[in-house]
Image 1 (cartoon, rainbow over the protein chains, first blue to last red):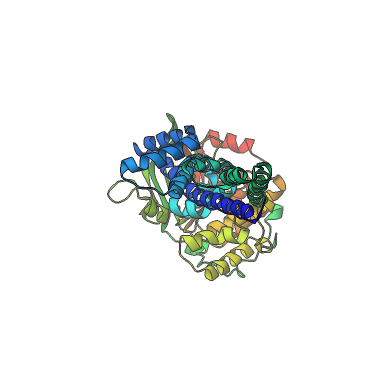
Image 2 (image 1 turned 120 degrees about the vertical axis):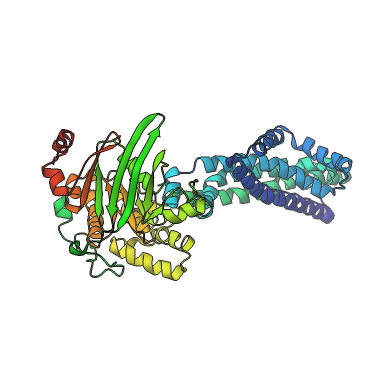
Length: 213
Length: 284
């Protein structure tokens, strides 16, 4: 592999990282918001969200990315590939994250909530100051698991023409006729990114030990 | 066991009331106020068709300590939890310092913010402590004053340190709840409730989850509070403690108050057979 191949690999890696990163950030927050709306059990809205979650969980990423990219013009939207890719990844991961947040909320200690209410905290202060900090720690293993699924599933966005870390290996081997070296490098780069997430998870677990009453 | 551990205010390193920076204008017995801290009228509550409270009336005067006794399932915890609306009664009314809780002037359920404000006038101590495990001892105590009352961090921490001193937990201010013993957790929980400077303290079986040798340290703290003139409603199984600390003893049986008297009368000349039976079984 020559210098330009390396450059292409790093560019591909960067594309994977930023598109996944943006999708993860939006997906974690949107998942929390959807979980909270579902917990409020607003009629109709709740049914719509349930439908969305089951659809998003049942649709392969490749299909979802294609659908968004190809159907956007029908709705009068011209989506750039990156936006379509981020949208597909976010819609997918949000559904899973919403379920993770919702279970953290539902399993939260009733006693701790009562203690908060007894000191005069409103439900919002209770959520923000007492529940959310603990839910973040208890949900983190599940969320990080979902993040690594998203990163590993991200090559799906190549279907709409985004040159990500996996797609770029194809392009290099099309020139060099040596598919193995770029793929090995790509694997190593994926492992490095996932490794960072696992490391984060360890830190979270150490902090979580304190929560064991 | 009990007499031994609470014989003196210095029992477990407690500051005497004179040392306390938080000492209230404690009305002594002679000058006891006649103002009503808690007023409960015609309170009824059922769970799944079982009547847990039946038309309960109770008044707690400011500065009084009222203990609620009764066998398990008699409704005493439910009664206490209704006072700060953790349990919603089916009918009847509760006033905290003249302010009705749970129902607004229009007769409708209170909006959450308003309810939170009335709740803040009471402090509650739970059987299983219910400390917040993600916060250290100091921050467990400062959390509500900062985020409910809007106190500054410095002000809340100064108050918290005084209260931790009062309950003998200053050395553990930076510790996390998971590292504390049950008795220590409960003393922090008491400081947390006091930090809101409530008009009434509610204790829901504060020593029932403790190892026997840790009961004394918690009872000693509660006894100090009664000496300082705090208004308290206490659900307990500790008979000797109830006798020593109460101004009024209430006995609940199947959701009804069947005996209500000063502790001397209650423990020596109970008028109902059921109470005499209960006391015999719980002797010693």
